Image 1 (cartoon, rainbow, N blue to C red):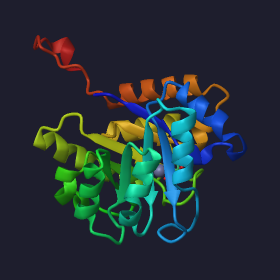
Image 2 (cartoon, rainbow, N blue to C red; image 1 turned 90 degrees about the horizontal axis):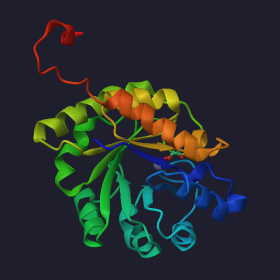
Image 3 (cartoon, rainbow, N blue to C red; image 1 turned 90 degrees about the vertical axis):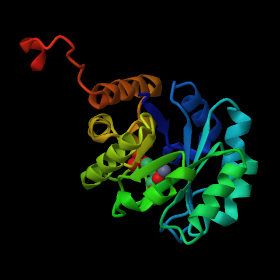
Image 4 (cartoon, helix red, strand yellow; image 1 turned 180 degrees about the horizontal axis):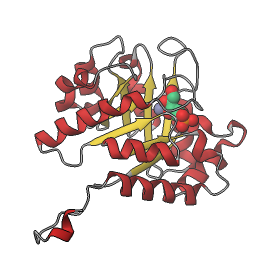
Amino acid sequence: MDFAILPSLLAADGAKLGEELTRVAQSGSDAVHLDIMDAHFVPNLSFGPDVVRVSRRVCPDLYRHVHLMLTRPDSYIDAFADAGAQTIQIHVEADCDIWETLRKIRARGLRSGLVLRPQTPAAVVVPYLRLCDEVLFMTVNPGYGGQSFMPEVLPHITELRRYADGQGWRDFAIMVDGGINYETVELAAAAGANQFVAGSFLFRQPDMAAAVREMRKRALLAGSPPPVCHTGMSECSS
Ligand code: DX5
Ligand code: ZN
């Protein structure tokens, strides 16, 4: 299984957006995560398609992963696709036709994703998985960076990982977002997540590349199953 690390631009220094994007691009991370907030679905405003466009212009090779925290994401799919989004995620709790919106994202040639608030049960996304390339579990209440990780979400992650394994979807992308640092990345990986969004922790590191490497290494160690013993010898059983 591959383990991906996605820095969230919400924690960047907005006065030097270009430099911050370049820092992410040079960090060896897998994508930049762009958090879009409408002050209605969540109690905060962030930025819009223009910042996605800036990201494409400054770092065209940096994958653009867009998380829409909008009450009506269906009205903005084209705007974000035109701006250069490569994945668009919508909340399963949004006030729109989820099927139709996922279908619209895919019809634009993009990867589609569903996001759950910490309180939403994992089973809610199951009917949509045929139209959905990835699922993201919020491990904080959406709206702000810099909050503490909510461990009560971990069983939800494990439940979906077991379901995906049961379907034979071995590398299905299960993501976490909120309060991710060296300790919580291990908890989330052990529970079954394989992609990790981290904002404030990564942006406050003087060497983001070293932190991304360390985070990926910890996820890999915590998330990989122990080696299988093929000999049947007793010393393999520990
Ligand atoms: C919160 C956003 C997150 C946030 C993560 O609503 O979806 O992506 O930026 O920030 P940290 O890692 O600081 O919790
Ligand atoms: Zn996010």
